[in-house]
Image 1: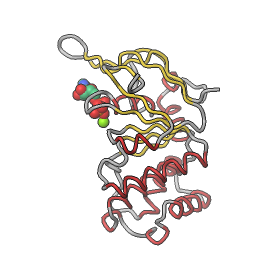
Image 2: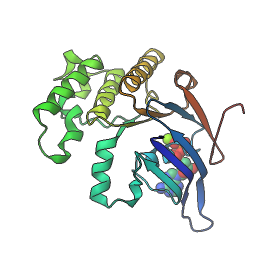
Image 3: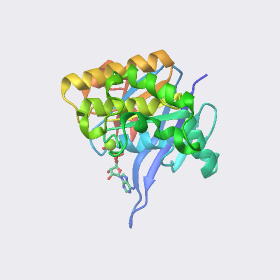
Length: 226
Ligand code: ADP
Ligand code: MG
């Protein structure tokens, strides 16, 4: 059964005149273990789509179900815990807290319910090791390179064991070598955990690493070259 299903998904923003239609009816089905690149020029609606898939924003038409739940049927508290339990995010601007260590940054999502447990700390440590930063656990973000900071963001996105991992231009600020390494790391972890991975990018190199590729064209998802 598909884990993520969108049907005729639409998003428009109100303006003084005609509403601005950004997503004009998108359909998509993804199952555990699928990974998808969504490409498209700046302003085409990539982040808008990703934010809706991440339940950070809501659609103005169509339906979305994740793990058989319609997140937009939930009240605010239910939605916050659903999101925390099911969805991991990696942004281009990694939003690490500068005053916290690598370990503390990775633990932030677990603090929604109070102090991190022993288990949380153990999982954080193993994720930090997995992204190659075991020696840097007690460093602050300012002491890390851009590629290393992005690795911290990857570890943080995985701390609650999401079934859907969303990445918005995850390599946008990185040089080629670091971009390639982050791409490989994301795929390796996604395959090992059989998550759904959706990566929004305008990097062809990153898109080429992923199993499927769709393009946003005038508010719709199309197959490139088709
Ligand atoms: P991308 O990530 O592909 O660069 P976005 O999804 O960020 O594109 O934005 C798509 C379009 O939607 C842009 O034209 C942007 O100006 C517009 N947009 C995004 N958020 C809002 C908003 N809150 N109100 C009005 N327009 C918006
Ligand atoms: Mg964007």
